[in-house]
Image 1 (cartoon, helix red, strand yellow):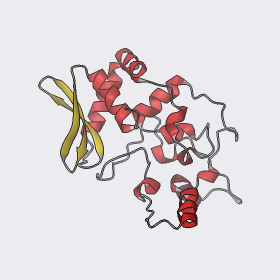
Image 2 (cartoon, rainbow, N blue to C red):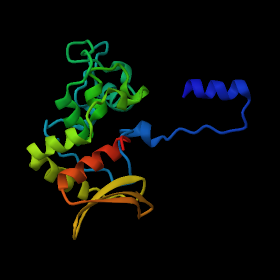
Image 3 (spheres, rainbow, N blue to C red):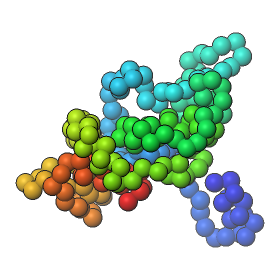
Image 4 (cartoon, one colour):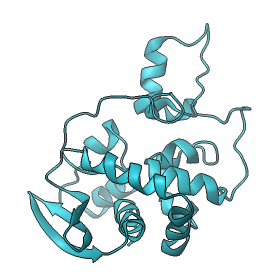
Length: 201
């Protein structure tokens, strides 16, 4: 954003620049206008926003530092051993992160500031890989559908819903479905939803 604004100023362009503040407040990978979800601890039992984080500060870590790290304190994010893990990200970690919506949490162990880059460049998982993984673990697809069905959203979000012939994945725009795609298999529908939600369609 700094480079873009500088270019605009240098060229004296008659345009406006606006940042989407909700992408700084909440996980930018998430889409939709919805009620704040109730935290249930996830599979690891830790809040997703501070999962895989360590904070170092003089005199120890207090609540303010931890909260700051959740939202903007990316400079305080390091790997468990104080160093970044070597790329590439293992495929199993990619799959788990994409299905759980924790891409930035996982990438924070590999990239110093994952939110400043296009996270998709670090993902090698494709549709076939997702479907194979879900075929081997059908309970994950069921849990994913249940979780998505509980989200109350009506705008700027991908949705997955069952219908009489299988499942539909579509983009929701002010309550209206756009670009719907039908799937007979839940695993194929979940794979589509994951890819659309991560801008990988």
